[in-house]
Length: 164
Image 1 (tube, one colour):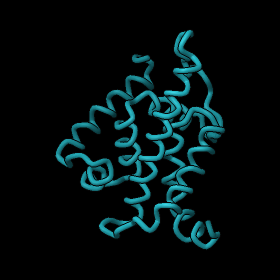
Image 2 (image 1 turned 45 degrees about the vertical axis):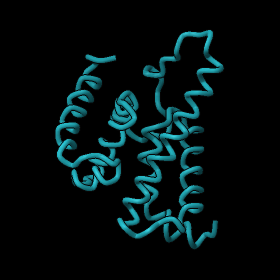
Image 3 (image 1 turned 30 degrees about the horizontal axis):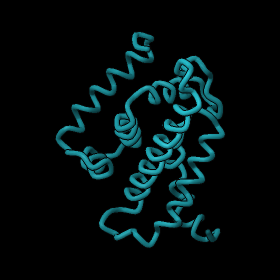
Image 4 (image 1 turned 60 degrees about the vertical axis):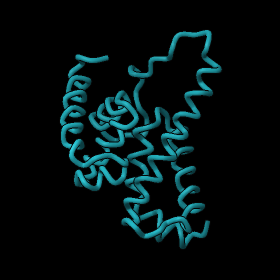
């Protein structure tokens, strides 16, 4: 990957990639692996960009797809190694790599959501319109508002300690 490509087509969208990767990882090591894989997939897939949407929309979609694929792959690996043990509860662990404790708590709460709800709330936090969110995740724009309200309520309960 050339530094020109990285500087022009990835670096301006690094914030998007970082936020999505953070929401799907529990450790700094996993985060770095996800970030690198996303960058690699952007470079590999750049010729597949058909300009039917904005580059940023394509970056969101690709990043989400890579993170979801890696998450599923990692779950399968962990199940093999931990099959004789109880599931590991990471909710009490402190997240590393955050400058603000409230941000770390928010990401910990977001990680407790379903995979698709994580994607929706991250896009909402990026101030994407319901239409943009629906295009990125492949859903119906009419349902996004209802889904976002439900997600907010769930996050509020999680952050208030009313949900495990």
